[in-house]
Figure 1: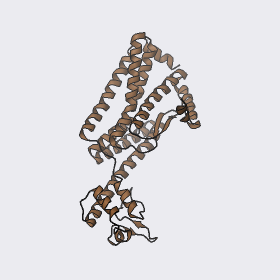
Figure 2: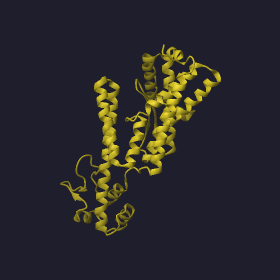
Figure 3: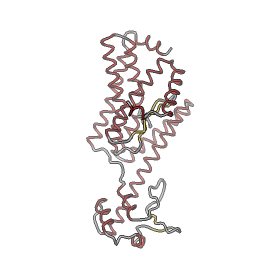
Figure 4: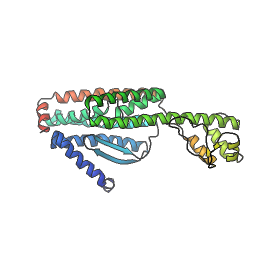
Length: 321
């Protein structure tokens, strides 16, 4: 209990209260409470998966009129981790909806059926393949694992779709989604350029050292050979110097470069070892794709069956009052 309370901050409380007021204004108080509970369960699924992969979690933040988000303190360790973390929220939502559906079977209470439908519908919406929704993150990581450019094409296509939706609806929500999607597109573009810079660097260093083009071999040899001083790197053209006498790698050209000022061999090796996010293997791609499609199908089934329950529509209208 104390550990849970430690994570509660004034900012989170204010955002929760503001979200309750916002959703109550739109749908009514009871509906708002059920909706926030659905969002909380969904985000707890993300939090659980983040901890599973050792990703520190800042906490869950509710966003008025929008929803909620579980914020991580650092990047995900792999593309597979991003897919699992993205899909775990809807998976927890599906599990909760199924439990509520079973509760309706035993009680015949239409209010329980409506709650099952609501939580299934919230999670189904999150699987729409648009960033920054869970579906967008999962599809992006799967496509990037197949080919880097296919992920960028997907993100670019989604950006165009969001722009069209914004101009068609003039909705502030789509404007926020547009900014988030654009940021995701830039990050992936930067990741692609970073990898190109590392490949160029690795090739030049391997040729200079006379060793195989392997990150571990090159970096270990650089650190073990004291003759690989900054001066020799400079003289051999592997690094260059600007007017201030600070070493800079010459491979950094073009947009969104990853190369920063580098002033010693250790920093050069550190950058060299910062490889791109590990991509999913074929088995992971297949399983991730099946999980994504399967979640959509099952959530559709739960939503449909729950809303078809006798008295469910009347109960739904009552919740909105």
